[in-house]
Length: 514
Image (tube, rainbow, N blue to C red; front, side):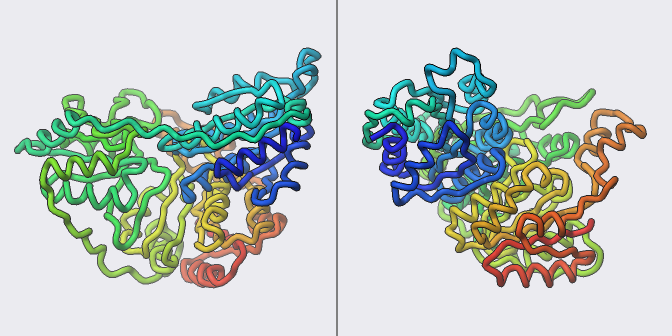
């Protein structure tokens, strides 16, 4: 057995059964080993940032890691942006990165790079195998690291000779370490804060604290103590729709966030960080909460928020409280496209159990309040701020759901160009994915940021923010990737196309002119 065969066998034995790949010469023995190992589903991405983004979306729905196959340091570098997003989403991923043979590296061939250095920027665990005999053992350790709660990125670098040399040994799965326990003193302090009369208290939820079970516990605490519940602005996966809490997020904009949070004198964090701005702005604070507010961490991101909330419910003797009814859903909107109309139409038409991949950037910041009464669904956010994850995350999510749930991408036009190749994979895999491409022919988010920093764009700067010379034709771009597409100018036409696409077991793109 060579090292590559031991790698594939160990990954399968450790529960890794999906590989998102863009291989090169250094990985050919791994690719050959896949032919001889039934059980590994292999998905091709045409660019590494699509590969890493798909692995991120897969983990968010499957709750277990997939592996990626990347070609040397430059291939890893191509996938770094969406590995950054995956790291912020706390997604578990095992990167398999081919590299120069150990004896070839001293000759400084053109693709030689500091692969370990690149991997460390986004990985919690990095290791280079040096012998075929070590590959299986190292692969088991990589899976163990990726599975550490709530999920981590592990990068295993394989010089090509460790793949083709004989001596590979299949390793047994390694036990995943349990999350750090919740300290009783932390729970007692949170209970004391919630019993403080005359204080406005915010319970801020993030990570695994926005799952249905955690939401139910948090709502019982809020009802018993009159605390306010909110979600962090960025979350990997929020359970939303009927039967879930009508959570609102901390606003993105500095001024609105400060105004929203200023009344809270106590903030209890459950899997969240204290709210700060995405960016700094002249004359404005980085912290969005009151400087005098008491910040208390009930559970860190690497602890179990359900256990923390359960302990707090017990300490407060908070009785179960039914989730509030979201009310009657709205009908499909009519007329020219607006953010409110799009959200209303989405809520009216999305099927039960849908998955929404949201990279609407500036257009979609108010979508939440118009979609609370939608059928139960998962809402996946751009967690790290590096644009270009919406389409690949949707693709990975559709594969994790085994093509059994409709995935809907709310996708800005500028960021879609970063990972357009995702559409090809959707077509190849025949995924039930509907992309609503929001085409305003500009980087609208940057126009808002210009105002935020007090700058005034002139002719040259305006050209850097404009995507209309020449126009991007998204119907033709989608068709070129093998995806059926149509353009919509009104919300009525959008609704007709959405309903039609939902009946197909294939991807479809709607170019919505906004």
